[in-house]
Image (tube, rainbow, N blue to C red):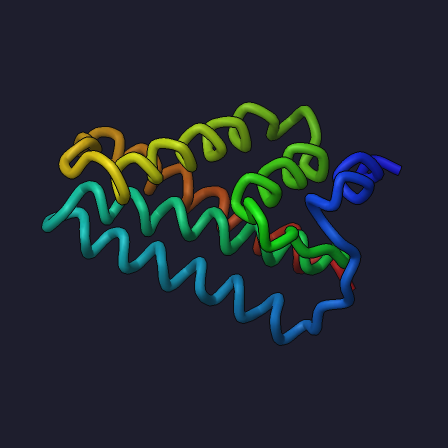
Length: 143
């Protein structure tokens, strides 16, 4: 099974998640996209962080639909490790990008104010928008 290593190292766990929780995560992702767009005119760091969160929430929705949750320790990192396996080679570069942005988001929020450029904020917002849409379409195929 492709998730065995993550399960065995306790980075993820099996858990039945309700359709309502899946929808709630997707709705949160879409709300975050709108908020990130609004923040673009005010604060690139926060716009970046909220756009990143949209990808995290969409990823969690996908993970939930597969019957998994990330462990609470390093949950963002574990979510993207799961998504790398789940989405396969076709989307590996995109998932790797979001994982790199996870680190940059941490720096921007906790360490260095003003770290994010307008270009970086716009890039992640554009990629996040496409990603959330892709996940929503994928989840429509899941019963």
